[in-house]
Amino acid sequence: MTLLHLLISFGGGVFAATIGALGAFIFVGFTGLVGIGTILAGGEATILNDIAFGSYLGPHIAFAGGVAAVAFAANKKKLMGDANGTDIVAPMFGLGDPTVLLVGGIFGSLGYAINYLLSSVLAVQTDTIALTVVISGLIVRLVFGKTGLIGTFDGSKGDVRRYFPEGKFFLFMLILAAGLGLVVSNMAIALNIAAIGFTISAASLIFAEMGLPVPGTHHITMVAGLAAVSSGDPYIGMAFGILSMIVGEVFTLVFNSHNDTHIDPPAGAIFICSFIVLAIF
Image 1 (cartoon, rainbow, N blue to C red):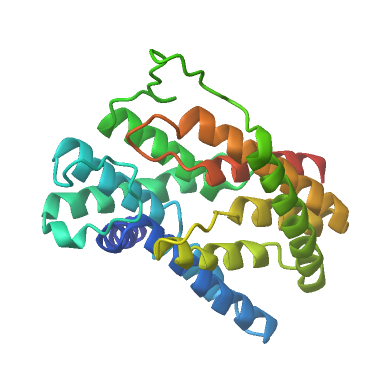
Image 2 (spheres, one colour; image 1 turned 135 degrees about the vertical axis):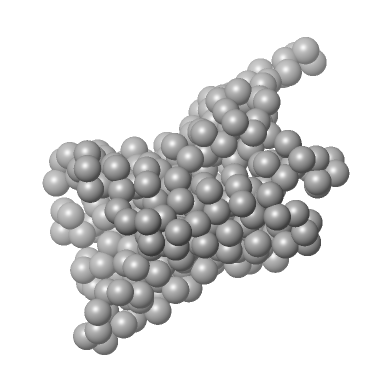
């Protein structure tokens, strides 16, 4: 870790704050696809490793910086009207406030430092980028939020807080995870590239950016691809894709409901399930 790397990561966080956290993450998908295409064409992995997952666009740097920036802008500086810090779509450029960009940049550098500690110093056996996104989100919640780590639930009207998905929606997600997990697993094994499904899922969120009801599926495809390549079995990949979906939905209900900042459920599912996959295989 060098000062240059920290400064470059600061720039990545500033960029994400400018265009919005989700917009920066979508670029991970498209740039990652270019990087994978380059690898398959016999080129180096620089685009994939150093740009899509590096200090420019890496989710632990750019997305995390964007999450911090909007939480600061909405909850602390009150620059976004009635909106709170969960609006990861909103670009901060229109606010014209330099302190918001500074927060994005600071959390970009922090994300680089945390991931370096986890991966290079502690050698944690999981997806450390995803784990860093979660840790950064927890810090943002504690510093810029008022709803606590698991949100503030108002049960005065007789409502009951749920911690596990249920009903038709759960069945819907189960079918989605099974189908998507299997097709991505087969593709990942054929290419021997675990992240191929992740990049497609990330790119597909451009439709969510447009306001269309498109779900985040990158936790399903990332874990399915990793499990499939690690085991060589597409059915095992599918099973882990389903598990990641379930963990992601539980993570949403526990950490990302009734809240005023964003703690990323797909990142939570990826680091938890990647730990299990790497422990087994």
